[in-house]
Image (cartoon, rainbow, N blue to C red; front, side, top):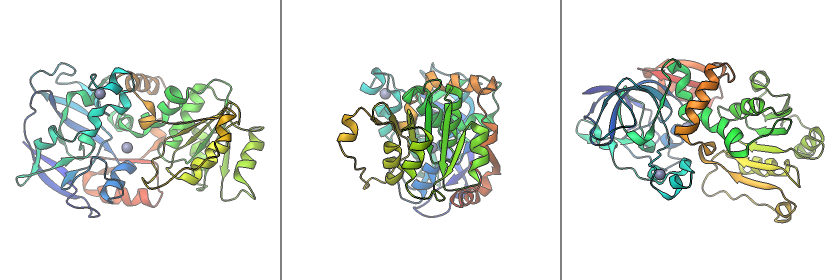
Length: 363
Ligand SMILES: [Zn+2]
Ligand SMILES: [Zn+2]
């Protein structure tokens, strides 16, 4: 069948809107109609060539979306036509990570074969970014990458659970396991950091300090539940010293949601020396090093990382969607622009200018 898609022909080039060919799903594969696809930073890093993980050209970017199952290939039992689904990190169920419950690191994430071959443009195979490739109206995806969800959740919010919302919320709720009454500091208030703030409120944290250099983020951070907003550019003297005053000596939980090693070090230092935990969510460039004095760990501080916030898609995403539908999580306020596919490059330009939080395209 034919499908409208945004094709990434080469590194650094704008995406081009083309009609591509989609072959029928084979064994274990599923044809879906993508109803909404979010613009996440990781696509942009791959388009710009800053991040080579499981990207290839020509290819189809897009890894944060929601859609409907149209057709299943032989042997598919996890989903049926008509199911609403959120594509996510695979859960093969069989690798060491899946068997240990850390499905967020499923080893199938690191393979690039499979359904990619179902997408082509003028006879050339199109590489699906992260094994997904969702900037196309119709896509073919492995069944173990699809999380079925309730049908009454709106696609224009549901797509965000394919990456940003789930990563931010899971890092707080399922990885750091923030406790009621605790103090939390969040460095970086982008599409993930604001969800960390909201997750901390949901978990019952009593002090939630949101740190960013963009004053425009304050209002949204407070709406998500921040009790304090710190513009790190305006702090006179030492930022960590200032944060330690606010938390009376160090926070119970800190999070870095940008991918900057200077901020990671500040987040680590701002965690309480004896019992604080610092969780790294942002992806720093491969060549960067995070330096720490080992004595700062000996006292009892913890430092941890969490790919996709440690989320187990099949278990956690339906739960998060329920909480949104119950009004306990505010996703709508973070979805700030809806664009037709034709304006996808403008959407990324807005993101580079720091405008809005999350935008999405429809076909
Ligand atoms: Zn696995
Ligand atoms: Zn993403």
